[in-house]
Image (cartoon, rainbow, N blue to C red; front, top):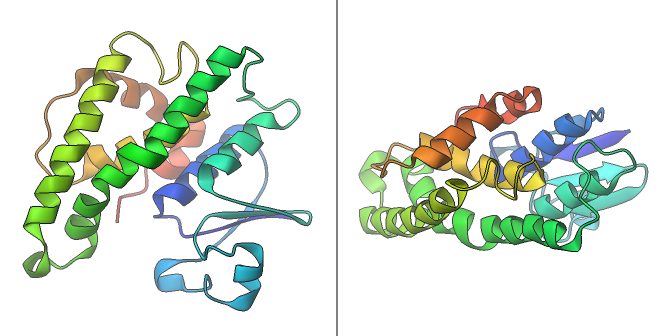
Length: 206
């Protein structure tokens, strides 16, 4: 039995869901985190000492960290999203996975939290604006790069598109003023048409 622990509206869980769907692997998702609790229970902490989501449990093997899960799925024998043997091309995928995890998603965190999870009268608008400005810089970088390539890490869809795509889904659907990013929009529309993408990109952000 393969289980994915985590709530469906978590951007990190969404990456794992999309990856599993692309891989065509059967799995059971178990709600955890946020209002669902679970993550502080001893049994969960025994699997994932961080108390975060997602956690992948598979025949006694346990893995946490969403981008590590994506890399694992890409390394499975016969994986549809197998990493290339070319070390430079593979490093390019890693580059964008790291950028998403360390820059793009953290940059929009305050704007997302304040606009989507804090009641309107209690929002820290200065934090929202600072986060918006930071994320616009990231969006500008991504848009410039996508002007010269079909997908995030090159000419083919990869796990980098999943990671960055889940973050872009949030950014493009938050009730905030954004500059026009035609190359991001073009790319997002392409990846959104993938059958596996519907498992996450049709979920309203919350």
